Image (cartoon, rainbow, N blue to C red; front, side, top):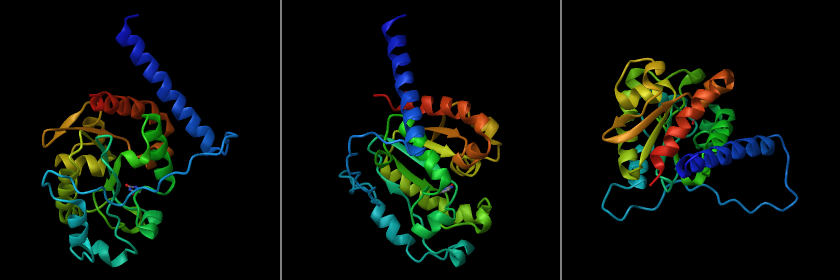
Length: 233
Ligand code: URA
């Protein structure tokens, strides 16, 4: 085995161990050592020094948004959170009930699985940025309609530009189609990295789908490994 293969294999083992450890933690298993206090995720990262538009500015423009019908049912607009410190931005579909209540993305059951996926990649939730195609909750958690996506997508695109990530990950069909302007099924959009404005975009299954269909987790792991490869310097 050459050094590169050995290194890759070791990285794979470490990632799987992290996945396993996260599972134990979720199941309530705790180490004896007191855990280090976790810093709360930042709502907006600091303004980039290179003159790019800031997230705060985009967030301000969205305050009180009534551009589409989703505003009438929302408790909170869910802008996004985290940082692109790792170079990675996740884009989901739209807030669910928990997210709408708390004003934060991916904090419900699907969010717990996303946390696990991030951890398995050797990252922490605060090192990635997490947002959605639409910023207000679609009723009954339905997929956002084309006019809702059309109203919100320009803000998503500006958000991504402001963050300047190295890699984008679309979680599920709505995000993949909105970013790629495609109507193809996820089965044809995932499996190989695409480009979004010259930036690698990996489309994978939505964590909520993975909760319902655990047999797809192995394929999702392949997508996450591809992201890890693309993030390497
Ligand atoms: N599903 C999403 O697509 N986004 C969230 O923020 C939560 C669940």
